[in-house]
Amino acid sequence: MTGRPVPELNTFNMRSTVACIVGNMLLRAGSASATGCIALYLAFIKREVHDVPAVFLGFLAVAFYTSELTLAPVFGSLSDRYGRKFFMLLGTVLGGVAVLVLPLSPALPIFVAVRIAEGLSSASSVPAVLGHLAANSHGSAAVRGRIMAVFEVATIIGFGLGFVMSGFFWDRLHEHAFYAVSLVYGAALLVFTQVLSRPGGPAGEHPHARWEVYKRLAVHSSTIGFAPAWVTINAVLGMWFAHLGFQLAQVDDPSQLLVGGFTGTQVGLATGGLALSFVIGTACWAAAFGRIATQTIMTISVSALGICCVFLYLLNHTLDTSPGQIAGIVAVVVLLLFVVSGFTPAALAHLAEISEGFKEHRGGVMGLYS
Image (cartoon, rainbow, N blue to C red; front, top):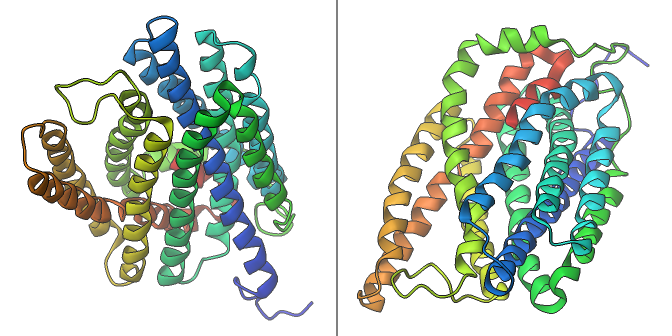
């Protein structure tokens, strides 16, 4: 062992980084396929058994994200102390086991419990993955931005694949689709086993989870400027993905183009198309990192999201509009989604930059992603 610094992105570490990204992609595929199957299951219950209010879909999303955002900083800090690989593995086990409960009972409280467990799954795995990527990409804003862009592309591909699979799973297996979902989580578990096992923080340091770090971050100028935009954009995307499958799969509403009358496969393909737009857009944005400030990219993306919501409203009320006009609106929506897609990789790169001031707490800082 010499005093010469070890390159952050050597061959072995690159293999571990790739395992992080691919494992996270499969984890997100499992989470998205569970979300899609749950929405289709609830739409079936509403059609055939009893009413399911749309507000319940929102409550399920709240249950998922509350458990994730509450414990992600805790799990992230623990990963700094005990090593990140364990928490990646723990997250996949939590998600895979949780979905196995759903075929046993259609009781609504069961859905709530499963979504809470899946939130814990993301809270455990994602900060650990991001802490690993932040540690392996320090020293170059361009490299870091591109790695986070690759991470985000893989994440969106995972979401897209998951939603597409959910439609096929449901149409063929119905409530037994959740057994197939658990296999997706199992694949993520296998990939995460290839991640380099080592302490999360710098060698020889085993920092305790200190809430003082978050007190400092709460008044950090970069955090204060970043948090409102991050919450805003995820609030909108959260509403989209919480309700999309449920609304499309209901009984057809003749007064709205995007409500009711779609099969599970069609719902999955539509959601996959949405995810594909984000994949292409994120890939295009990757070249901008190092040339455009991350704050600027986030500002542009949030503005595009607001305009996109207006055009989606117009699309939903185009029943008497010609096919050419509908195609034009769809094209504008897709273009705006390309622009919106730049937000998350820019936000992740921004968080990674913040983590440079808290190197022994990278996992904890990256827990702010939730």
